[in-house]
Image 1 (cartoon, rainbow, N blue to C red):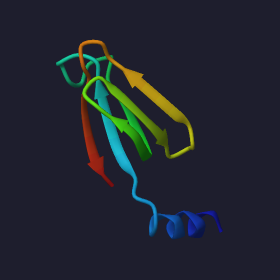
Image 2 (image 1 turned 90 degrees about the vertical axis):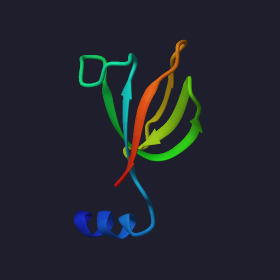
Image 3 (image 1 turned 90 degrees about the horizontal axis):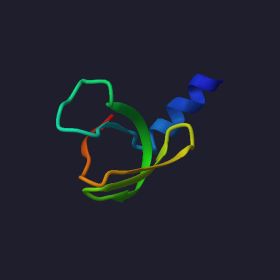
Length: 72
């Protein structure tokens, strides 16, 4: 039943894969990956979004953030 519910939701909700790096180097220790359901703020120095699990996350960077957004 759970798989059916996830499949039904996937028809109406678009998820995104967000990769955030706090410096200019990708694939090092500070990188984080999130599965995002909805973005509230997408700016150069500020990200605010809701994850697939319903958690509200806010990320700020004084020097700017390096991030990639991929639609799943």
